[in-house]
Image (tube, rainbow, N blue to C red; front, side, top):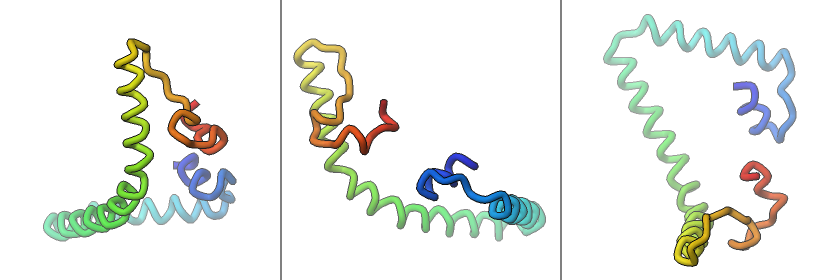
Length: 102
């Protein structure tokens, strides 16, 4: 959880105070989830899943061009009999922007 928050915060580790408050909120949410009725829990889960879809669908559409280029590069390498390896420059990406794929 700390790494995910650091990534979302521009690779800066969140302060100890923020993390303490965040963990308390998480514990409260888990506790409330344990004491509410099953119908309310499922309804809340359905609502949050729907919200995640609304966030993820535009992101998937925005990234689909990169994914298709990567797939075509992979297929091209397979046809050439190579063991496919990803190189960002082959699909028009800057190597510095994809350090997590190294």
